Amino acid sequence: MNLGLEGRTVVITGGTSGIGLAAAGVFLEEGAGVAICGRDEARLARTQADLAARFGAARVLTKRCDVTRADDVGAFADAVASWRGAADVLVNNAGQGRMTTFATTTDEQWREELDLKFFSQIYPVRAFKPMLERSDAAAIVCVNSLLAYQPEPYMVCTAAARAGVQSLVKSLAGEFAPSIRVNSVVLGLIDSGQWERRFQAREDKAQTRDAWIAALARSKHIPFGRLGVPEEVARAIVFLASPASSYTTGASLEISGGVSRYI
Ligand code: NDP
Image (tube, rainbow, N blue to C red; front, side):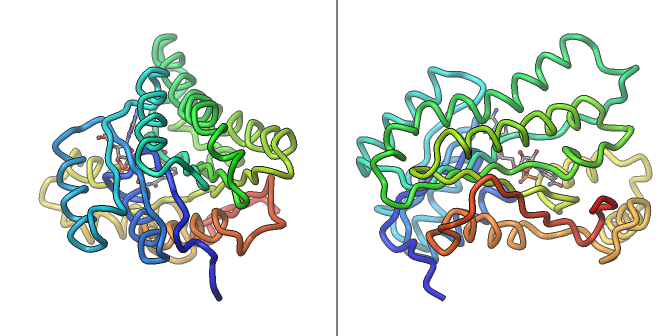
């Protein structure tokens, strides 16, 4: 199947690690030019060098940008406009989860979490919308979590924010139709930078990574008995971003190894 991404311009927030980085690789394999952002300059430089070596420097743009800052996101959009003069796809991926219960979440943490989850969508959508509107195959993909539908007791504020983002995706899909499609992926546990950091912070330092992951999958009752890998999410993002899914908007695709308990 030809996904129709050859020559398209794809923007990915948070592309220096995990899911965003894997998605950048698949979009590049499909012939697109890819712009990514992140906050850490050193990781951006490493990612630029790696992707440029594999796909050619002309097809890769990296830019330091914190998606919770409107001025940073505006500068990222300006850089993409100068680079290719276009954007066909926006993947709102940057972010991370917060492990707290209601009792352990302070007001400041609630504000930070709501700010990250909502403005990591709002600022990029606003900044890239003029370019997306000029595309004949515009798509936005939001990387979201199954927590939106199935909250976990140890991620209370992240789950609430995730549910709000699913509502936002639905609203944007209606408001932007038919010129820009807006869809989301809702993820279970994916073995990425986030889980590597949690592994490094584990209590039992003698536990190997494989044993830690297997125990995690058991404790979460994941029918597949393992975590997903970023490439498994990347392929779904690329499908929803591509003209191959041209009649799909306001939809969400679950990638979780079967862990959801709702219909
Ligand atoms: P990683 O930690 O591997 O990658 C996160 C990426 O986002 C990095 O490139 C990071 O770079 C960037 N980033 C984080 N915060 C910001 C910010 N404020 N501005 C710009 N860039 C930022 O995590 P994942 O690949 O796992 O996460 C990708 C998305 O998927 C996130 O939104 C996450 O919450 C979501 N998700 C992940 C799940 C999982 O199990 N892995 C489950 C459900 C959802 P830098 O730190 O340099 O800014």
